[in-house]
Image (cartoon, one colour):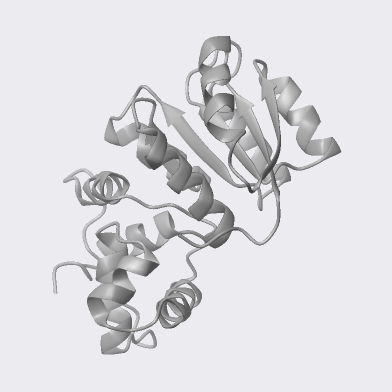
Length: 222
């Protein structure tokens, strides 16, 4: 894994003290974690972000006064660069899709392993996202439901190179840049270059938006 460039401030929003303490126990020994702020109320997180924006927020999906989607929508409207990782007991497609479309950088079940959590945080800090096959499948099923709009033709002016198409398919399958580099026998930096080009060409603001774009235009069926 690639180490983050700078020490990070992590914010934890969860209404269960024991769960927050467990997260703190996992995160405090990590060399790149400079500080950890725990909160049980969404209002406290909003106040913190307005005072000093955390590098990563670990956000519970279900809160008593304001739930995860409301918190994410409020914060990302004011701080679009904020990196949110959702931690939830709920793994249904609709929850994953909703949070990723709102702008969350990753979505993990609360029964994820310590290694999975650490990997997600480090990847979000170093690359801006952590995408998994589970998240990809949820997004693709969401846009491919019969009730949704049919597949639309790709704009004529928008063309992908063969390599960009390979990278796009692997992204949509939930592979990370390092895994794509290994499969295609190219460097990680080259993969990240193709990745950025795909975002620019499609106008997608996130990996989630890129997957939705690919599914809507039938790019994953070719």
